[in-house]
Length: 117
Length: 260
Image (cartoon, rainbow over all chains, first blue to last red; front, side):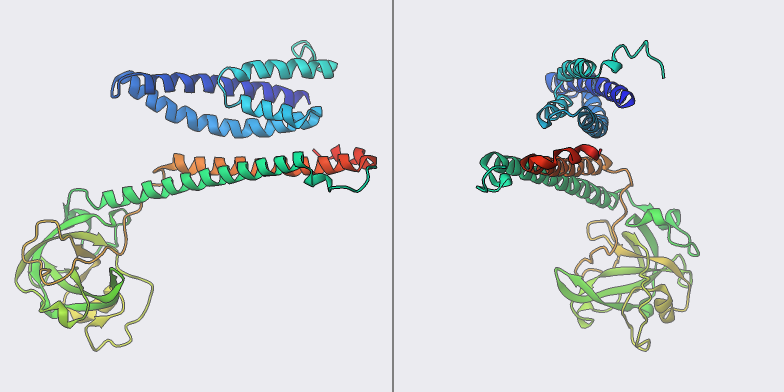
């Protein structure tokens, strides 16, 4: 459970950062005049990040599913966890909720930094 | 236990879930196919782009004794030489716009008249008689390089000049010199000199070049992703159905969550 929790948090962070990068790329790609250096950079950034995000998200979906099964959460909450991986910024908030909910329901997961093993 | 009314999985709320699952799976499946089609289309486009690259001299693409260079399928090449009209053959069973017909093929001796020759597909005709007389004399031809046919279909009737396939081993029976391990299809839009294809319909390429393995790989990966999401939606739906029917028969609730 602890391992799964850690993997989920790392994945959520990565997905969140990728979504921010994707947002930046989109803003550059569509917000600037076509052909400029920054616009081309945004275009390429979007293409690469979208591909990486897609595959990291695949893993995120699997891990989120396993975690929600293990914690015995409802399908609705799982859907929220999954959707969060598609909406920029939302995932940071959801990850925070997941973490605090998990710590409430499983006190042994509190303060993961202090507990070793 | 409730009275046996509507089955639990057919109540309105459950029907909504079924519908949602079906829609999600259908959308993901469709998006996957869409990406797969984009992948194929881009590869086909790249393949035909390769046939429009600048023509190179035949000697730069391959020598007379070389095996066919695999990365040169569809490469435009220019050849100068002397026609060997006596070595002309006709390849049967070649279609053009769905109509069966023949390829008119004449070897072009590259350099002197006795030098090794390249088989040149001058064009297509519905019958051998329509193909007209093979050309003679000097020629400068531009065409697409193609690997010889090789499915091993034998020429059942080696006496005539009609072949079932453009195999070098069959064609060489009709000439006195060596043949290149390839043939060229005359490009109707390129500059030609005495290509002998005026009376013929341009022949279609049998083999287009292979697109790079990485061309449009992104679309292919997206296709897989979409199908994964579709499969996942179906899986979640299946779990839901299982859990939900377990809830319905309240007495057996504890055995369900043992998996995963």
